[in-house]
Length: 205
Image 1: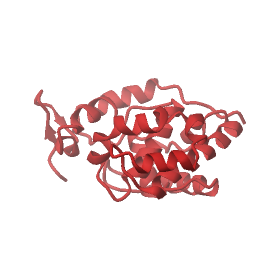
Image 2: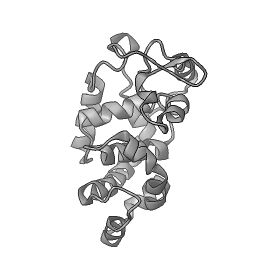
Image 3: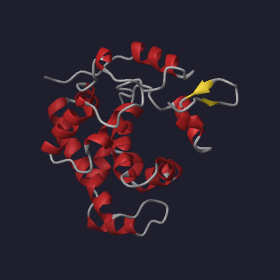
Image 4: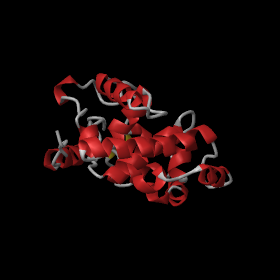
């Protein structure tokens, strides 16, 4: 096990949080805290799509550019993007210019609209896959899980793209469906308290 990273306050944190200057604030204030907002959930799934084959540092550094390019990841707006928007985004040097990934995000926005019509919200659907804490492995010891495999399979069945089990596991970690902060991490207890206070969204059916 890699030694924890000691932050500026001298407290231990997940080792990866010291890997780049951009990581510490993201680790301390976002990663692992539960999210029930459809826009943020869609944004994270989209950014994980773009991260495929790249580093999270690259994506995090460009996150503001991605938000501007994709209308703040408003699902209904992105769902209306057409070929002209795809071509515009392919010229945007502030983002990752990959046609397949850009088209996947537009496709996924359309699939998200369909899902929301059925379930009431993207959040309600996603949180259905929250695993039982008693069944979780040691923090940051795996890159997929039964929950990520099941959610990935369900999304792909609904024709989402770039949502493989590893991508989905990173999404579960970041959006707080699991608390994957290492046990020594000072933020782990904050995340756990937030998860205990979090009202799980419910499906219509």
